[in-house]
Figure 1 (cartoon, chains in turn orange, purple):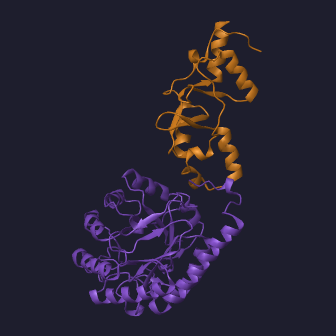
Figure 2 (tube, rainbow over the protein chains, first blue to last red; figure 1 turned 90 degrees about the horizontal axis):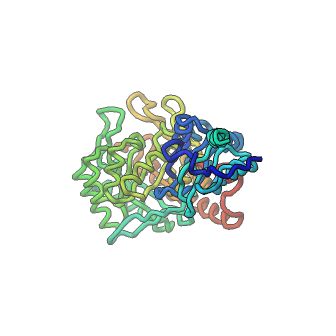
Figure 3 (tube, one colour; figure 1 turned 90 degrees about the vertical axis):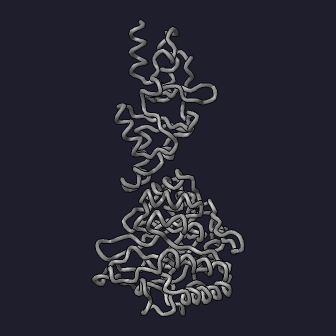
Length: 138
Length: 297
């Protein structure tokens, strides 16, 4: 169990230009390309006001492929949003880093979208830089 | 299933609404405008049948057939004469009219006369055509290209929407299976309707055998009724058929047009199946069996 309280999420979160952020009309092919580009298995889908609509992960896609059994060409043109989790686990930027990491452990997830009080996407907390920051701090 | 109704017609014309839980709409007429008198005769005959059956309808006939296989085939009466004829039919029968257009330059005059502008299937992803259609401000009848998957029609829909038009009717007219052969995958209809727009089935082009007769297309007209019943049972908001009083001597699509003498019989069945389907949905609920696995759009 981590107990450090000094670092908060905003200290280590990725900015909006450092991971896959998609508009609500993005198709799954766009998501695949952007997730591959950033080498992160997650996309955040936002509306024109940057409000978080859903989160799409490698795992969501993997489970949906098994369930849906569409052809690849049909899957590519699906709206990414329909495969996304609509009410994802999120944190605020002022949450302590140790709390956020505990939350990830509890939910068994690798990433946490960072949102403001009105659900505007501000960034993404990825497990590896978060742990690295905590280790550097100690 | 589609939930955006579109309204076609204005002014003196009897408005036609196409959408979910609404009566089936018929879109039809001779493939090409052959002459003023022939177009008028066809409009008159179809009008009487639709009145008898209480089926809302839209008169369709094209002024320019730019996609004919042969240069020797009838090309049409041209934009000016054709639109004059359509305009007169519109006034005389108070029925909405439609024609396709295959050159962006023809979009404006077409939109000034026609209540519904049609994008030919071959050009269904041609940005210049889609843009020109959208800018007419009229509802757009967008046919799925024979080479297109139903889910890829979303790209064309989004193009039209991005040009500011959200009155779209999507139609299946068959899909190429190898060379000179079309097949109907009825899943096209629910898949395209996931866009939210109403869908239509084109029965007469679906039985076409494209360019199967050397320099003209063949067709198997005997399959029209069964495909109509199948499509209406599957779920459509409109039915498209080209009709001619003398198919063998029709100047365009002679091998695929429905003989006028069968129109009442086919439309009656389409209407009955459509109404039965609506009754079934009312009794058993929407098509929500394994819906969580569908999510096409």
